[in-house]
Image (cartoon, rainbow, N blue to C red):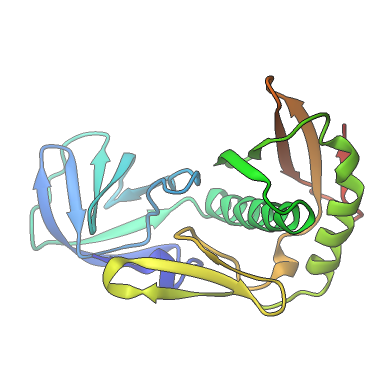
Length: 221
């Protein structure tokens, strides 16, 4: 399966051939519909007008479950559409979380991440961290804003194409294994808010949201 969401994450429409149809489950030769992976939620979209209600990675393939069995069959040409505002919000929050995570790793060598999730309106990262993580926010946000203001190019490509392993990199900052959908430049992220949530037992959660208006990033301890 050709994962076009990797080679062109800004593409919102794709015509491709159907590989198989089993009831409501469909497989395609090529796709722009990202399936949940690495904490990033799946895209919303449709295949020939039929809403996709679930996407599941099965080895090298992705199986899409439609709202009802479709009339098309293997070999047919179908059109896939994605909900672009949702995709772009996910891309921005995903990369915001990636940068925040790397900044914490740089500031606190040996820090352990124990969870992460990227949704359309909010991302979160969970750490093993003693005490409140809120006092770290001003420094993290200052470094984050500097990288956003630099509008640095983001490279996203394969480290091992046969194994479907990918990474993103920003020159002089980091190179990180990741199979999500990525922005072209750091400036696209915009400003963010950080909020602390204590989840007990030496565990701290950092919640990340996008700031819709132009301004400086803000924190909510």
